[in-house]
Length: 307
Image (cartoon, rainbow, N blue to C red; front, side, top):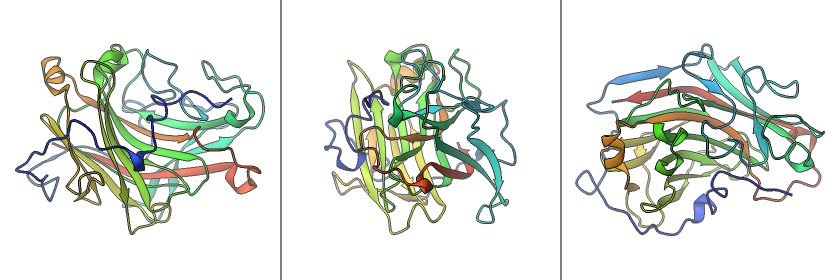
């Protein structure tokens, strides 16, 4: 049994999303060439430590579902099943010599993690990690309605990993019908030069989805890269290494409409941050699972927001 997902594992592979029905251009037909021009740095975490006044750990904050998705349970601070996936490590490739490392480990035995569907499923007995600037009681430690959201990250090479840097709106925690999800980057560990970026507004009447795969010359498992999204008014645009991403569906810069932007403005809603290392459930479990794949890691140099 391999079930449960982030809205059905996003319903389809990110690289093969159909052209969305609701796509408009903004910024005079193209997003800004430099997403930080004219903006000020309003938030930065360079991860010399994990600041618990900013970040919470564990299942995705919300009330609509248990908050675990894919093949891994998301550990709380202190870890699960004697494994703690969160660490600050030395890394000479980062700007300050330190990195946030989020790991995933195959436990391979019966687990006892609250509200996790896969405790008794051998293929789902993984512990992964999720850090977020919100809590399931509705508390939001950091969020912004507009701005340029960016993380510098390196991803694992692995047959199942599904790391992501993404945003959710504040109200979705207690009012799931308001959901606005911005996936700045989602990566599959077996596709070193391809990632996905998406927008999802879940549920009627505004149900709205757009996304594209992004081919790169860089190996995303071998080097740090910048993944960003600019959110302004009714629109968002996605960037790789601060260059506008081209939407595979249109051949134009990836600029997508936010149908719920008016609702967000009226409710003083914003977007909070998530850094996640999950395991995909829509691909066959490796047979055998090689020893080197029993544990894997992603790293984050920094997260920044410009507004």
